[in-house]
Length: 290
Image (cartoon, rainbow, N blue to C red; front, side, top):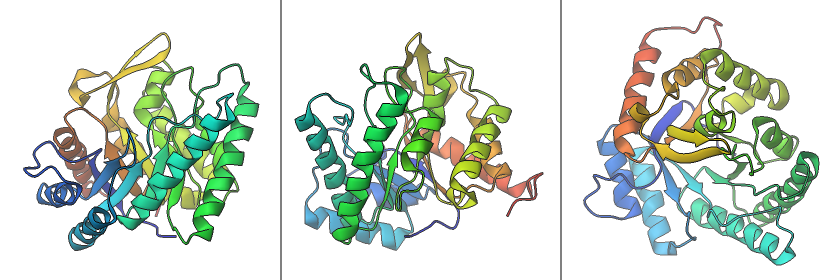
């Protein structure tokens, strides 16, 4: 499986400044802006022809932009209705298949809602589904990382510990860590350099140092309430300490992809990229990690 050699940064979806609204043109616009990543958003359904997928792959190869895919939001692997679970698995599979054709490196999905299930049973059910998904993709020759995402709502399964448990020991599966979601899930407590480092230390301890060289990260501004996440905001509209996230990523020499999910898309992605470059020019991390 492919592993990045640096941290690629870009927006969730086609940049707002793209003149022709197509995924290949979005990839080219990302490169024009000086960014080097983009997430293809299949949030309302997997709709991309083979022709468009091939054009997207070609654009990514020509520009060096690293692509990821977000599976549809209509996924609940913990539903009481077996038909809904099967439909959810199909949506993740379809996103992975089309994403692979388009040259994407990983596919991210929201695992589902607890309902009345305890955490341990929810994790067990997601693991069962995840094993089916990665085995099916492997048998089809689809090489793509499959990643449950940390979630911001308290009704949603997806604490950092839970998503680590979901993927631990499963080939071709890893996590997607959304720092803004964890900020919302904790109702603002997960919001410091020290807490971010603790999260990365846990990932390293449980999944190994290689997981830090193969990370899928989401960042945005965030509004939260008593039940966690309410809505994404632009970075300057939130008290979320995103710059400290970057400091922690540098401290641990994290590589992979960082996707900005702010409403302003490329505007905030560029802020993140500029801040990351400043940190990178500042030299070696205090831990001396390589």
